[in-house]
Amino acid sequence: MKDKLKKLTDYLKGVRAEVHKITWPDYRELKDSTVVVIAFIVILSATTLVYDQLIKWVIQAVHIGA
Image (cartoon, rainbow, N blue to C red):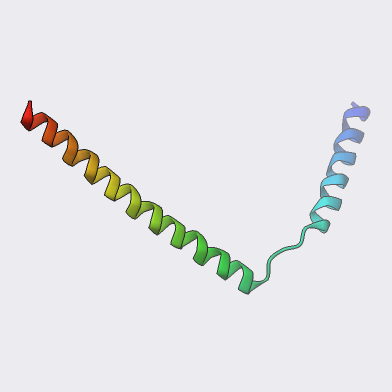
């Protein structure tokens, strides 16, 4: 049992040391990254909508023509 507790303690110490190495973004970097992500989501959503409508149109055209 002591061995497992020591392993856990060592692991948590290692995690804590790694967390202190992290460089957290400042407010401007966070805001800029958020804007990029939102813009990408909007563009991807619009693209998906266009392709969805095109596929719907093709399926309807094939179904009516058949």
